[in-house]
Image (cartoon, rainbow, N blue to C red; front, side, top):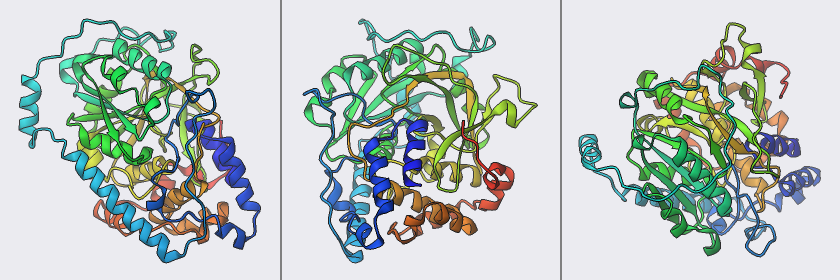
Length: 460
């Protein structure tokens, strides 16, 4: 089961690794006493660990081998020690996010708008970095559509990165600069998540364009917290979370912003259609179909039914609802991001946050939509060049299960029996958030949003 979970996430988010799958399989085969020795020694001790981000670091180390980082030491640790580590980690995360928030913008919305209005567009006289030109894959009604840019909200792009090759980072930025309405972009903020010197690329990034900026986490935070930190550092009305191994098509951004501008109470998350860039050939671009995102009771994401099959009245390329986010590429109003609870920052490294956010968004008054006129190619990875701690991936998923599955928690344990006795930390704050937001039940979500969860799933 654990092996299947990791392989499925590899296909959906491109963040799987053979080592992870093998470790998961081995863990399942061990007796309970032996498995207990694989408990991590408290999160505070793992600051130098590897973990992963949604897209995962792609490419090889400067020496030519895979760019893995050393794993945190393993050892048997008592429950009190683990809990102390979790509390220390929580305090450290809060201080990092608070410090990021203090790299302040103007304090009030009025001041922010005034500062933005008074700030001239930065001049740029260079050339955009090269990137593979994507084919025109949009529906004819999307091509050449005119947008009233004055009616669309401004946005900042937040892009965490770890061990990414410069070739893919620069190609991502090149396509963004060439195919985006730069007058609506406040900044393209890269979050250096504790990269070693050879992987930082700070000077190269800043030289690409005045709107490209870099924030460095001196200690690696993991994808989940890196996004929270990045969102805290920007003041734009909209935040678009991106990954550094993509090629966007022409007018990818305008349809997302248009759909956000239509959203009631700003309570909509929007995703582009993610086409496929094969891992072995960054110059190739394969068109994806129009699936919904879903998951099974193990909380493992996968692309499920075609929207045309699920809803026979659907007319392509209209935006359509999806029960689940696929991972780390989506746009959101910043005020909604904050009032809906951002991410669970007691989740660590990588994994589980997209399922948690999917359940929270739909059940607490929001919605998630895929916008087919917005498209980009994305590298879906088969293997990460670093270790992922299986224990932490499972811990994240269990935290989501404890908060959101309600009377269906047992279905999760039946799919992932190892998680039953896994220490997941204190979830009381997330339960309080759930109560504060007056969220609907898991049964409501199944009946109204994702009835397929009651039956046999058929991933694409």
